[in-house]
Length: 403
Image (cartoon, rainbow, N blue to C red):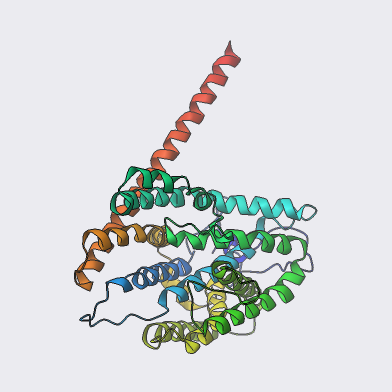
């Protein structure tokens, strides 16, 4: 096991930061470094399944009158909500490991530094996916040069990840998730650094249940793509969904910390509880999600913070099944599927209309794989260009110093 998974850091004890001992004791050291042989990729695998869920939800447009397959009504919205929960939990864990001590006197700077690190990690793939999506739209939808140039000038809100703040112009619609997440993370990161006790035990739980409750009542227990808050009367559905999910994720981090402290309950208990909760989630979302009015799904989603907290703690024996090194690729693959499947759908809708559901999904899946490969190629070429530019500058400086 590695310290990173448990939020351990050598620093003075504080009231709002608990120091945990990993289940099974401290990790073994080899050559002075933590041995990560036993790292579990269970959450990465879960995110991969959720990305497949989102992909499936966006094939609803291919379902015809003669299609025998009936897709779960809210499978995409359910998955995005869980994505937000995982992101919120990892955000809290990252802040307490790297930011809470260093920026305790400058919480605003610390929050912005954290946010910029998130943007930096997601920017290359997101911009490559946006380029692919806009190219596909230009060829299949806009076609006319004037239309292409006009739409090109409206791309900046999505490029800067602020389209969910009100400038809701989307060329790659799945990127709304990234925009809403980043906007909501800034004030949350500030509170986690400045007022962590208040954020963990008061603000996050209260904000989570109220925002999810408002959404349930406004949308009759369903995920709406045109969410209208009756109070402010503007379209902020994405931000409210992010607010609910991220705050539930912070609650998951609190649960995770308590699990790590616990030395009374055996691992068998956590294993049983985790298996039951995962089965509950998958059974309900796959087989009992038949209506846009999904009271049962919304109810079951309240158990997800407990599930991901147990998974993240590593106390369940299920984690032993996800310790193969090759499983580390699940996380980047899931993000690729999430970002690049929409462009594939646009091509199928415009180039292969009125085909069977199976044919449409097959072509969409193949194109998603192709665009993901192109995405990786674009990112690698850009990184190589930046690296070569940096090396040239270093050589010039070395040459100038030698002269």
